[in-house]
Amino acid sequence: MSGFDVDLFVIGAGSGGVRAARIAASHGAKAMVAEEFRLGGTCVIRGCVPKKLYVYASRFADDFADAAGFGWTLPSPPVFDWSRLVAAKEKEITRLSGIYGQTLERAGVAIVRSRAEVVGPNRVRLTNDGREISAKTILVATGGAPALEPAIPGLEHAISSNEVFDLPDFPRRLLVVGGGYIAVEFASVFARLGAKVTQVMRADNVLRGFDDDMRAGVRDALAHAGVDFRFGVLPTAIEKTAGGLRVALSGGGEAVFDQVLVATGRRPHTRGLGLESAGVALDAAGAVKVDGYSRTNVPSIYAVGDVTNRINLTPVAIREGHAFADTVFGGKDIRVDHSNVPSAVFTTPELGTVGLTEAGARAKFDVVDIYSTGFRPMKATLSGSAERVAMKIVVDGQTDRVLGVHVLGHEAGEMAQLLGIAVKMGATKADFDATMAVHPTAAEELVTLRTRSARHEK
Ligand code: NDP
Image (cartoon, protein in one colour):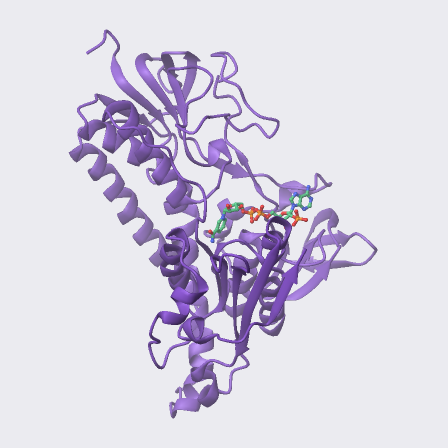
């Protein structure tokens, strides 16, 4: 040991921090991790995991409706109980958070239940008892926090994704502000659970940055599920009244809601962490600036995950934390490859995606071929549901390499995971064509799409 209290001090026991601490310990490092909230971070406690549980809950609404077409008769209108879902979710989250603690303890990582702040290149202070710890290396893995916009009178009455999982009462009338991942996912969930959902956003469509045809598909599917969209509209004031939250909307008009969920992005969690005093450079958005090894401008301080605002996804944070630990404590040399990261938006239907959008490919490549299809999934034939599947393969017309694949439909997230392997390996359209179909599936369309829909040449 080096004269420091610990080899590694990790601030934040979320996805990235926990992985980094555990792997560093497995390489023999004396590691300590501080967490001011619950072990597991945003993803486990109030993000991906509870969100997916609520998505499952919401989809029973479709299943019950579909069942009749397959010969089932449900005894009575199915009844949904919000408080039972919240309680079941809480039980599972508590279990998972416990597993995080056990995993760290088994790996020999010391856990400190306190906020920690950086006080120097090799020093942190625990705010609960003022104790200072010296560390050879500090890892900042504090994630992000909801950023509620715009700053309007009465914004304090709105909630963020932090609060939405544990609302004491089911919001029968819900206003969702924003059109990103979080906004569309919750609009989809609450509309299916029976809420009257209104969704407003400054843009003219949901999911900026995703493929335009898929964006249109998500919008149409949510509208079909009952979401009342207002594009180019934002709240201008929120007033608490006896009948609910009265919200004034830009362009005139007002309406009353039980809850206003603002999902207008997340901000790196760096405020008050003492990073500036240690000389750590932040960017304009407040994110920690790092190099390919997640190292800041201060050689003893590293940062991984959402706090660096690279690609704000849990698996990316985990990979960054693992690579950091292997490189700094395991004698390896690993940079995380941030290209072709597959991801999914868990609306119903889901959007699974990897690689470039059609517009993104056209901006970068001289010849872009598009193979796309839209169809009714087999299940919809008997159920009579209006569900549609959309698929698009974006191909470099000069090399035949698949640049991106986008799927809107049931289990598209699962498809994106496997498509990610093919695209990461540099598969060509010919490789897709040479792959035998699995029948009957929806995904088989991805290997049977022979007719080009469009060719774009510069
Ligand atoms: P996003 O960046 O996805 O969306 C932000 C939304 O807020 C956009 O509609 C944006 O509008 C709008 N917005 C931003 N600033 C303002 C403003 N000043 N006034 C009005 N509207 C504004 O953020 P989310 O909060 O939805 O999610 C945060 C991150 O969490 C995501 O980027 C993603 O990385 C991660 N995440 C991933 C999920 C998944 O993988 N399934 C699920 C949930 C979150 P505009 O489009 O006009 O810019």
